[in-house]
Image 1 (cartoon, rainbow, N blue to C red):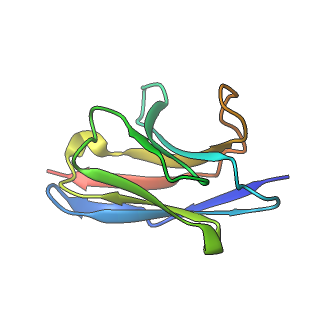
Image 2: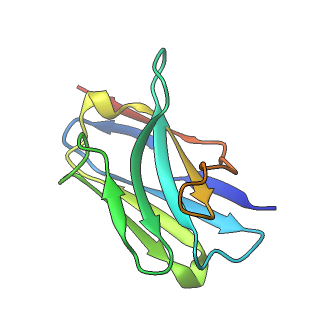
Amino acid sequence: QVQLVESGGGLVQAGGSLRLSCAASGRTFRYATMGWFRQAPGKEREFVASITWSGGSTDYADSVKGRFTISGDNARNTVYLQMNSLKPADSAVYSCAIRFFSGAPFGSWGQGTQVTVSS
């Protein structure tokens, strides 16, 4: 069973930066894809970014392109989300999840970490 633990959230002013971490444990992840998602109050959960463990291929939501960077540390089984130029609209609970096969749904959701951006 996979366990994902997020950390790094907090309160930051607009224009500031935060780095989120997602530590994974429980099984090997060589061919998996890790994803970051976020959910604001009253809104549906939305995709933010993803990265493949094997080749480091990344994907981003249009709303965060150029501001957020996803990266992975295979030795630590940890994925990071560097968030720069934060906006109040980025405020949400950020969660990570894993997908073991292409086309499969993301699962094994972490508990999430709150990001609040003040104007």
